[in-house]
Image (cartoon, rainbow, N blue to C red; front, side, top):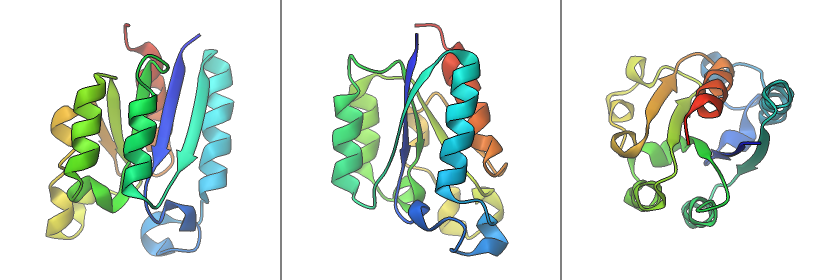
Amino acid sequence: MKTILILNGPNLNLLGQREPQIYGSTTLADIDAQIRHRAMRFGAQVDVRQSNHEGELVTWIQEGIGRVDAIIINAGAYTHTSIAIRDAIAASKIPTIEVHLSNVYAREEFRHKSIIAPVCLGQICGLGSMSYLLALEAAFNINP
């Protein structure tokens, strides 16, 4: 059975309330339920977490070494600023997929550059909660 770590960064705990014109009304709990339902269909185990703290995300990535088969990460604003998260992903050697609910390339210029993308297997963005489900399918189908 594959184990997939799903990490959500800062402000994602406010989904459903925060900028609904961009992120919609779906909450993080709704996305979590969708992920768990889909993971059951695949026969995968998921560990879903959220933190507003960069260091905690780094620690969780490091703790995944030897424990998880893949990581799905929505690093939120840390996508554009966190060398620490980028370095943790690179050091872990765990196949990682970057996700975003919104199309970051259709938004402000500063959101167009992902520091973590070069060390990720791929990136899925702009498809709302479907971004996570597509990433889950990809993570499940990654060869070990």
